[in-house]
Image (cartoon, rainbow, N blue to C red):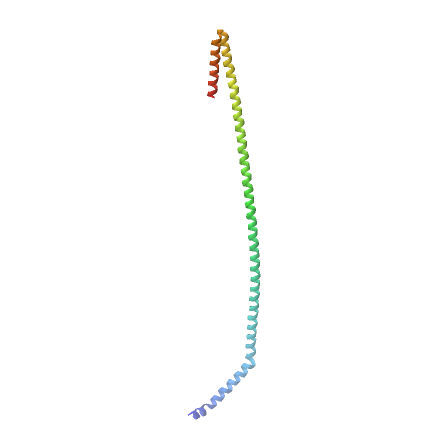
Amino acid sequence: MIRSFLESNLINFLWSMSAFIVFVLILLRYGVKHILAAVDAREAKITSEMKAAEDAYVRAKQVQSEVDAKFAAAEGRIATLMAEARKLAENQKAELLEKGRSEIESVRLRSLRDIEAARHSALISLRQEIAEISMSVAEKIVRERLDISRHEALVGETMDAYTANREKR
């Protein structure tokens, strides 16, 4: 059975083999160069992309380092600015406190001057009243021509009136 199969299909087998060999030879002659060129081109493209990716990775690392350095510098600058702002705020606070103390002291001194002026005015007024009372007593004494006991009583009354006036103020 194999023999009959081979005899009947041998011609077809030889033609198929020869067609296959011709096809492989044509493929080797014309197709392999293009396929190898395409494979080489693909390999070159992959190699250049790998190189570009490595370069991009190195550049990204450099940029990351630069960004980190700038970030650290910015943090340092921010810390410096914050310290300066705190110092400025403390200076302004001290200035405002000193200005407030100065204003309080000037108000206190002005109040003391006003009190002293009022006291001085009260003393002048009191002296005028004493002088008026003394004049009225002297006038009464002169009018009545009093004896010594009556004179002492009038002087006592005048002194009591002066003391009472002084206590009212």
